[in-house]
Length: 286
Image 1 (spheres, helix red, strand yellow):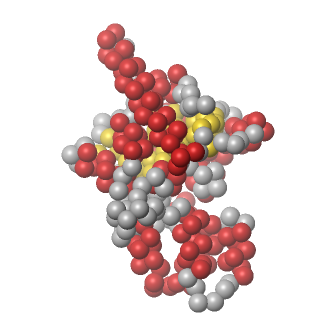
Image 2: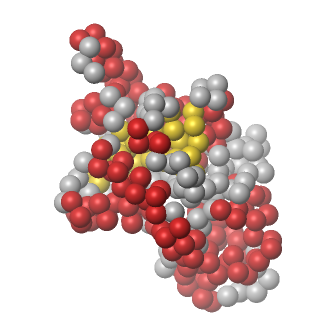
Image 3: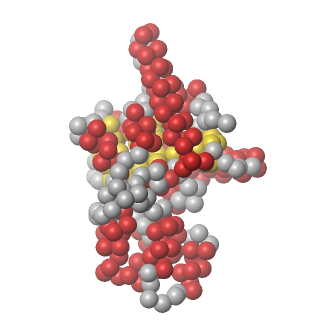
């Protein structure tokens, strides 16, 4: 089995009418020089819980229910002033290196990449490789709307980054506050959903933004123009439910060998997009 990319998706990326959305599964491919991989959101929270001096049953319950926003709210309160340092130790200090899939995503040359990750692995690589021509936009930037019509390449950070812990969207309170204070950002994201095709890579369906953004879009407009790659096994019933409730078309791949098939698939997608761009340029069908 290998990833099969729909021609509609290849066309959208080739014409730069696509948004590539990346989650913690992409960062998980990275390593430090010592071979340490960055934690997923769940792994970070579980480790933080284990670091508490006393067990807290209500935090354990939230983690068991995969209610990570609730668990994070409790943990942030427990750690208090030590919380920013814990975040930095987990996501910044280790010095994670970009992996092959980061390079493959960059080579798609999408005009907009949305990173749900707190780390800066992808944007550091993209900025260095592009000689600082890629523009980073956080959810709190006043001019975030320029990503809709701007001519630059953009990386959008809906959650902020670990080097600014006070502005990270990480807890129940953070999300509730952001929806009100940063309404412009969510309007921009909604506009992108209407005008672009999203390709979600390394994203978990439990991420609050994945739930809010795509469920809201699906039930308002009854459309399914977006795509998500997910590892097998997945039943037909699960695939149908994701499409029904999130409006996401599932592209399945094997998770063997640290999701090697996804990395190779994205690389092949880049080649298909490049060929399509050559065809478009040849007939000047812009």
